[in-house]
Length: 111
Image (cartoon, rainbow, N blue to C red):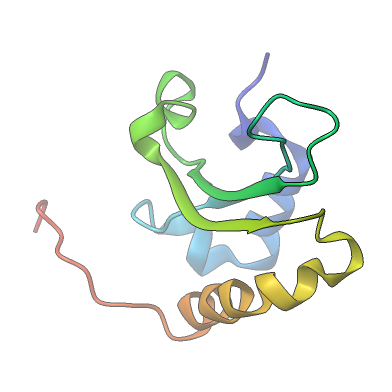
């Protein structure tokens, strides 16, 4: 296994956005979405879709720990969201774009 910091995509982002890559306090987030049947019954018509954000610029032994994974949305319903998933994800994507463009002020204990 390798850490994501060694991946070609990570290095491409560093080349495209050098100011972002130079600042070690900038968060690199991974976006994960997967559906499941919470009742473990294949005939059930209910589904749950957790949407997770993971902080990838942590050391490899920390980035997959539960306390560094954020549940930002839970999509539940009588069936899978299928092609309509964009309706649910639009507010999250807009927030992430706002974070990328404007940024937010946060407390920094190192200063």
